[in-house]
Image 1 (spheres, one colour):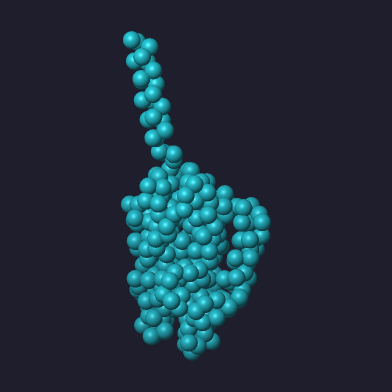
Image 2: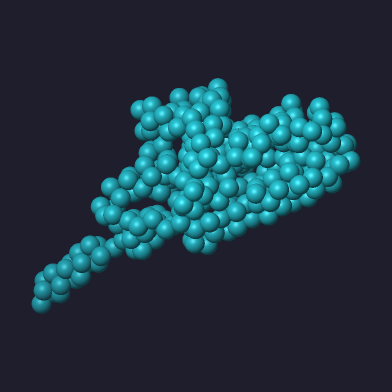
Length: 295
């Protein structure tokens, strides 16, 4: 009788083991497997990382990288998954990751120590520096010419903190915060702000897409080095390994550089502008030695 009970118990345990989640240590992979879908957060105007194309569908460098990651996730789960897209902005992208609405954000998001307390990042996929974009007709020569004037930065972006620090150091700036990059750019071009601070590549994208790119100019000053990465749930080591291993493979094979060149050094949709933004030495170093470290 005891033997029969033991056999019965073993059978129950075996069934329970088979029924246990295959990725119990990864809340993200479990959610993707359960939904048979992954939800991708994208930006609507972060050229060339993530933005809307002519058909109003999201495209960009970060999304091309993530297409390769989806292949890795499908291989790991052993099934095809649907792709759901959710637009995000600087203010809601982290909360949407934290509450599970978005599985991964594929925009142009800076990795820093403060954000690492809330979310996790992939190895660096880009290196940028904040700069000022101005109207060429205003004949501003440098940051000193902005003293006491109204400038704009996008709410929730790193640029807000940089601008506030510069203001506190004696520039006495009136800092307006727009809801997204498109609104910040409109404030600049409409004359409501004399300068727009943001990461150089995002500004280069907005400038290239403008009706008259020559009407916009960069001030010479550049600030801290900023590392971009794909963003996802904090402390999900298994999901991070899938993301990072895929990106490291692309970097080692040369495919990452080919994807980079497609979006940064060649004409891109929807208007065939060329950002003419060759890979810098800092990013080349991260391609050779992938890392999510920040300075």
